[in-house]
Amino acid sequence: MADASLGAYNIEDLREIARRRLPHGLFEYLDRGTEDDVSLRNNRTAFEQIGLRPRVLVDVSKRNQEVTLFGRSIKMPLVIGPTGFGGLCAYQGEFALAKAAAAAGVPYVLGAASLTAMEKVVEQSGGANLWFQITMWPDRKLCHTLVERARVAGFQALVVLVDAAVLGNREYNRRNGFMIPFQLTWRSAFDLLHFHWLCGVILQYVLREGGLPSHDNYPEELGRRLTSGRTSAGRKRTKTDSLSWEDLRALRKVWPHPLIVKGILSPRDAVLAADCGADGIVVSNHGGRNLDGAIAPITALPQIVDVVGKRLTVLIDSGFRRGSDVVKALALGAKAVLLGRAPLYGLSVAGQAGVTRSLEIFRDEIDRVMALLGCNSVAELAPELLSWNR
Ligand SMILES: Cc1cc2nc3c(=O)[nH]c(=O)nc-3n(C[C@H](O)[C@H](O)[C@H](O)COP(=O)(O)O)c2cc1C
Image 1 (cartoon, helix red, strand yellow):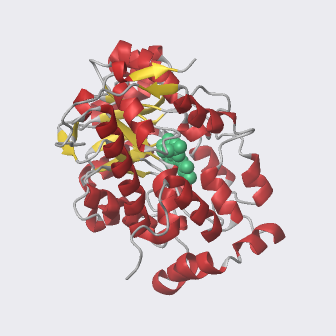
Image 2 (tube, rainbow, N blue to C red; image 1 turned 90 degrees about the vertical axis):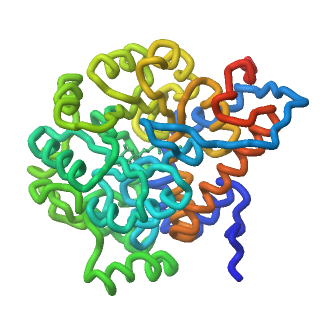
């Protein structure tokens, strides 16, 4: 019988196995931050500055992690966040992410840049609570058409990415030749000769689907292929630097379900998001992938909850690798945590089973920390259980 732990007892174990499974360029693409990785490191160290202050002699035998997000109950305070290229970490990776989310009873956010058509993800997801994430392209009509497609397909919430006015300066991708459209260099060609990945992922697409996956959620005009075809005109059409609060107001008019703004670090922006009619925000620095030196979201969280906690559902991501990280964010007022890399490490290790393993690790760790803190429910997590180690 296969070992359900996959030999991974924590997220770092999954990361290490993923490192061995993936070509170097792909692993760095998903694992690293930007420039000097300052934000990436700081996202982790910021958690170490928050201590836990347990209460004892509390009957914690009825522990439960359920929370309600936008009127729907979810089994754990987690959401699988949007990450392009799940489909390159494993064959049909987006299906695996959606199915694992459904089985665990948590939402999955499918990104517009993902490699599987949204309608197929809905069909294959096993009834997952699915959210869709967009970026704003210069042709707003194209965006609104995509949003309407997501509504018709049955997505429950819309996430608008706002912290990527331009792409982060990810020098390692250039060094590794890992750019989209993908350009084959001697270095990248050699790197891709990675037996496990080549046979388990790329060959599966070629044999079963007749070719590589593509950006199936993009309109034709933008160019869908990963290997070529994104002309300079197509590139201009995917620029995101003209997005403004007006766009958020316009989206509010066309999207009837929960609208979530992802990439907020400033309390003023959180208030603006609420004023524009958003239902939620994700306090995020994009996992340290865009602006190096951006503050850690967990540091920004208390002030943001202070100003908009009663008006918006405040979510958070970036750097969450332990159940105790999640508990700290919940105690500071976040309603749930989005996971970016953690499920992708699992996905790269063992497809759906690996994603399930990553969620299981979080579930068990959150449960243990809640018990040791003297809490039975997420609602009992509060700032008085924390202490700042400064
Ligand atoms: C490989 C990768 C691709 C990503 N692609 C997207 C994307 O297409 N859209 C988006 O909103 N965020 C994207 N993100 C950011 C994540 O949604 C999330 O904000 C971040 O990964 C959280 O940090 P963590 O990885 O430390 O959990 C991506 C992150 C990674 C690691």
